[in-house]
Length: 307
Length: 327
Image (cartoon, rainbow over all chains, first blue to last red; front, side, top):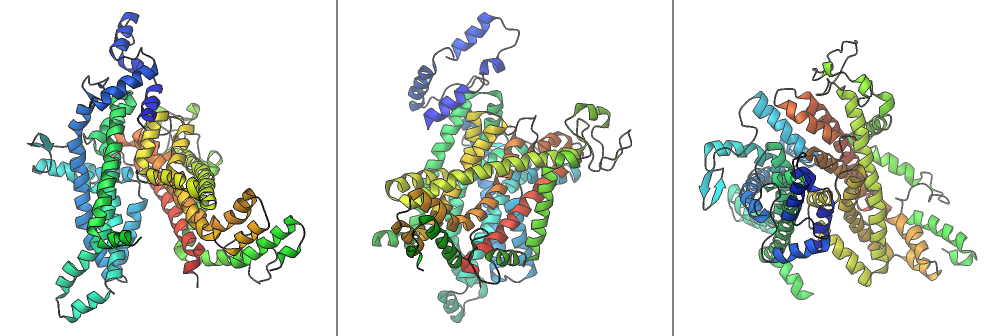
């Protein structure tokens, strides 16, 4: 995998053209090429990269002149903040809507909810983002269109959601990123609700004389959460990957925007480092979700024991 | 059935087909010969499909979109990429305004003075062809791989399905991003990237239905007739795995179009010489902040209608082709 990424990224384009002033003389060009180790044969470059990578050094950015890893880690809090806000929005808005649609499948409101969830699946994220900017930022002027706003340093990370200005900057990108997941949560919650409502334990709980609110809040929610949590866990990685699009639309200074800029500028070390980090992240997320799944749902463990 | 009685293999196989089509009413034309029912499976399929009003509308909208895209050079009022026909004086005109030659720009013009309607038609053509082409290639590759996995089983299957699982663990946009970073820009490279993103879905779908079909009697009978593997896989197994493949193909094509638009919007998709709808939307982005909404808005609407109509058609196909839901 690392070989594939490295060779592929290093064969495309010539970063020297992008970096050097066209009027520079040959001596200057040679100096830059030597400085970045681009004069060595490709297998030497790969070996060099691999030995360094194992020591946590993924190379220096051609453009920023600082270690690629550090550059990406610096941008990571912004992306994570965006992804988690989107996740929270998807849960907070998606589950009530889904449960409602599941409880009253024939109601007009439910039909509207389901129709909009289909829209949420089909609409291209970036276009929705543009339209949100157009309506809320340009026409109505309610929310700022780009950037992160005021940030607060917490434990070495800049966070937006602690200031009012930052929050207003965060709202639109987070909502945009969460639309797709929200549709997913709505469908999962609706399907789960419709299944759970007819179970015996629900009838029993109702026969016991429990209030409707307790019935829904405790007995129903607990049971529909299992699929929702698993799917959302798996989708967290998807959110981080998709933040590339949202960050570009809203000029959110996270690692997604960094990678797109780096691809354009042929800043190879950053591209390679980003891909390495995100692949690693995915492997870890998938592993954690698999483990969590068996903890959350005892039925999965039972099947494993039997087979 | 007494197909064993016939001496020549070719004839026996044709009888099998007839037998298959009776067993499986989902098979369409070609396999229907020898069926004596008054209503052919294909007619029934069409009747079932058009029961839903939404699906009917979606189907005709899709047909219109395909025609518009296919005949874009004939239909569109101007050729947006012919420099002789484009005038910078006409740039950023509001929808419905007239050029000084008296032509009406129904959807306005973009930053370079191109008629937006024509640009959308040409963009639709590019988007559709990239989406459909990549979908077809992925269908062939994924379908073949999935069939092989299901038919031969064992280590081959384990290996193939492991690769499929690994790939499906990563979101499509990430895989596409890696590939575009690896391959660089260009129409062919985007198609390769989209094929790589999609093939795994087809492979998984085909394998699923092929595993079920494989255990049925007609495959056993074909094996007893000592037909070659290739013949069994492609003439007997494949036709019966087609329905889910068609459904996944429709929905995946919509995905591919959307993904291509996203990549093009990010500036890492199609080159500027082959503008798709995504690129048109990206072009309008900078003008949007100054209230010139139409440059991004209308290509987006075109993209939206395309994707939604394909999705609706796909959904209806799934309902109609799914034997479990049939009355």
